Amino acid sequence: MLPKLLRLLAWAALFAGLCLPTPTPEIANVTTLVLIGVGVIILMARPSARAVLRLPVVTLPLAAGALLLLALVITAKSPLHVLVILVLAPLWFAGGHAALLGEIRDRLTPAVIGSFALAGTAIGAGIAAFDVIVRQVGRGGSLVNNPIHLADLTLMLGFVALVGLFDRRPLRVIFLAGPALVCAAIGYTGARGALVALVPMLVIGGGLLAFLILPRRRAWQLVALGVAGIIVALGATFALGLGGRISGLLDVALALVRGEPTDGAVTERLSMYQTAWNAFQASPWFGFGMIDFTTLVAPYMPPQYDYAPSGHLHNDIADFAVIGGVLGLACYGLLLAAPLVGGLSARGPNRGMILYLGVVTSLGYFTMGLTNAMFGILTQTVLYGVILSLMATLAAPAPRDMP
Image 1 (cartoon, helix red, strand yellow):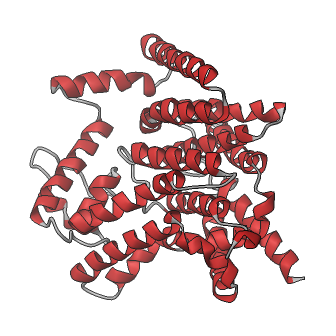
Image 2 (cartoon, rainbow, N blue to C red):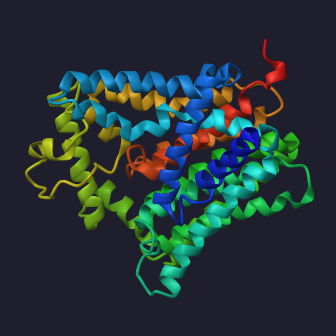
């Protein structure tokens, strides 16, 4: 009875982690956190499950957590200033989630992973389209989330869905719908930061995937065709004004280069980045702590700007630099490195999938984090933890392979 229950909970963890972040982020978060607790119990009760604790995707986030914890202890004014590190709990306890997914390890095929992620992608794109077409709102996504956050989540899930291309059956072409749905979601949400992230993810992530699953000559041909297609699509979007807010991205870039005024959203972000730099110089080693950090650094805002503090600084590098100084930046670096190192060090029959997931996850969260907070926003943090867990589950040796 217990093994069957654990397998059922493992399927629930996969469903909550890959299908629910776009339509019901709160339910996805709560369900995942609860099931992580179940996985931690499995780790304590079953020695064979602890193999995941030796993998880089689990150990590097723990090392990152230790560095951030040190910074928070140094700057803490109360125990709450230290306990706030649990906001990133899905990263510290990814091994527990992996222990639970280990119950269905033999069923985690490329098609299964790709199908769950593709469902989450399709729902995200559908919600954004429904908001604009039916509800007649300017930017899709507000029905369930912030439009920028919905675009980021859909973007990441769309590229996780491409894992399905490792399946050898002809029907695997359906997983190519992932990036297409992502483009629709970005268009309807008007998320310019997600578009900026989409381009390197398509070129680098898509290129890597082509070389992993195709003969080298065909892979080069596909990459060349893909790059040409991206250039044409972006050119049409900007030249014909097809993307609403997105089509103005080129104007924003030119204005920045020329030193001319930009739109309000860009100007506000620039003020945050300059504030972060000034604050980092004032406290470079340990930062200002995590609680109310944007309020604490508000006095460092340049005089030409006048914006009320928000919940974050719209840039992961800025956030970690202000929160923990050099230690915070080291924490951020280790978090970003975890999937990449995990992918590069993977061995065994699932190496291709793990390598692809590692590269696209590190790249995706880095590029999306340049214009919006990713770590510390709970749903994005949970999704990162789920992907780390998937990689650990695929990389862990089967019980029969263990010494």
